[in-house]
Length: 392
Image (cartoon, rainbow, N blue to C red; front, side, top):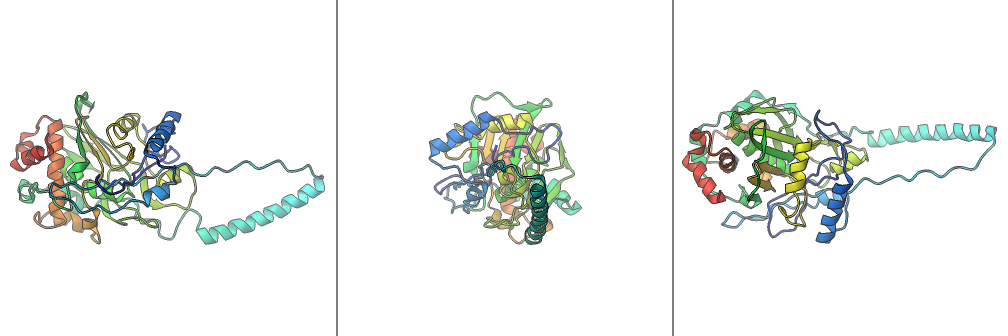
């Protein structure tokens, strides 16, 4: 299935879309699934017909992502999900050449080889093959200071940050409370399912408060850092962020399943998998469970018919879902990963305040899923107030 990328908050502005699962040509996790089914393609086509959209290339849809509009006093803002999609161009098969004599064929064949060799040399020198001069940040182990900062935010800092919605977030309009759905679990615990991509700036912003909130219920291992994409026309390029790729998470209260579909590394390849990733290298495929959740809840009737299948997407135990940006990426502009992490020590200033306020809202949602366990977290007044604002 073609991908779609960044969702800023939903609302009055035109919407662009975020990443759909790659078609399976990239690296997959052991239990990942490859390929795009005919049903998925038909579903995508139907959604486009209903919305009156023409099928566009991945880059055309992704670059259409606009910055979040100014938020109203109620905290609503348009949810942006950059849309990608569209299959890569197909090459037609060559027509059969007329039959030639052995000598003529050999001569022509030799000439063609020489010409092809020259063309390869020229193309490599011009394009750099698949290694652009500045491909992107990549994936690196998170510094100990970053891991410590997000894992050990004191209760006093969450209380000081509060639950006041600002122009920087949280964008609660992205949240939908699901009704009459059977509980979603994995390994006997409520499941939090996340889908994003490293290049996506709205995913980049959301990972900070999500990781902080999840750290209140369990422990991450092998967290890594990355940055959002810097491809041509990309919005909020090089936003410093964490990535859940290669990480693990343990908790006595919840299970966490994450998929980072694409990297931030620009590729000059024209493969379908790269096209589906907006020109970035594919990274991870969804597991069968993650794909099932995504195909059910990231499409109508749970999201608008003009806005199907984007990222960031989070499902909280089939009780709450997020389909859109939760925080403004611009507040992270120009900062290093360590600077963002260390800012959490000053909860009344940006970027720490919107991160911690957003984390309080994520915490309230997770408490809703765990039946308010643990009490040391879920009984905090600031968490209860956030739950009340979300009408949980």
